Structure formats: C-alpha cells, structure tokens
Length: 163
Image: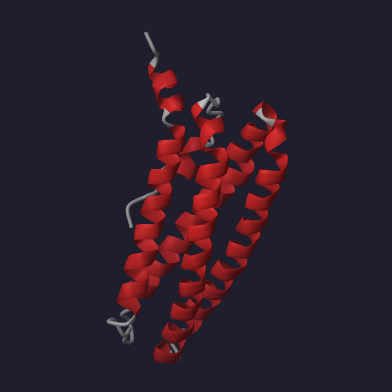
C-alpha cells in the first residue's frame, strides 16, 4: 500500500507542471488586460495584479533555487549542469521582473507609456517563461517522479496565494 507521501512524491512532476500552468495563466491574463485597462489616478488594479504575479513568480523561483534544486542536487548530483542552467534562467527572469517593478512604480506619472513598456517586458518574459518551464519539466520530471523528499520546499514552488 502506497503512503500518501509516496503518492504525493510520485506526482511531483505533475504538480510542478500545474504550478507552471497557473503562472502561464496569470501572465496571460495580465498581458491581455494591459490593452484594455488604463489606470486612472487611484485605479491601479492592473498594476497590483502585475506586481502580485511578479511576487508569485519570484517566490516560485526562490523556492526552487533554495529548496527543490538543493534537494535535487543532494539526491541527483548528475543534474548539476541542468540545475545551473535553470538557476541562470531564474537570474534573467529576475532582471525582467525588476524592470517591470520599476515601470509599475512609474505608471502613476505616465500610465500609457508605462503600460506599453510593461507590456513589452511581459511579452519577453512570457516567451522566456515558456521555454524555461518546458525545459525544466522535461529535464527534471523523471527525477521528481522517482521520489524526492520534501524538506519544506514545496510550498513556495507548488502553491500560490490567489491572485
């Protein structure tokens, strides 16, 4: 009889793919809303959603870097080159998220210009995320499904607060 922890471990690649799908859904919604919503003074709902998405993606990647990847390296040192590439992607994504945050801060003074710039950054981010997520799922899926102890890393990696 498989334990609940064993069942959960066997489904880690599926859980990771679902977490990535949720992040794709969120950025897709923000990108589609950018063309429709124009923030007015005191109306920053879109920017709030954008910043919440940035925080969720950052927490996801920090959870991977400090938890999931560390655990994978401990269990599967042969994955070191793959994990190094994924961490490199995280740094690139962090740079984009930093730019988005700066642009969101400026949006109050020049909303149309800031939204256009945010839209361009999010378009690039979405493309990088797609490539990154597909590679990560493909490269780590088997290792995840062969069992990986959860030392507390799963919360930030697999679950997000509602947006």
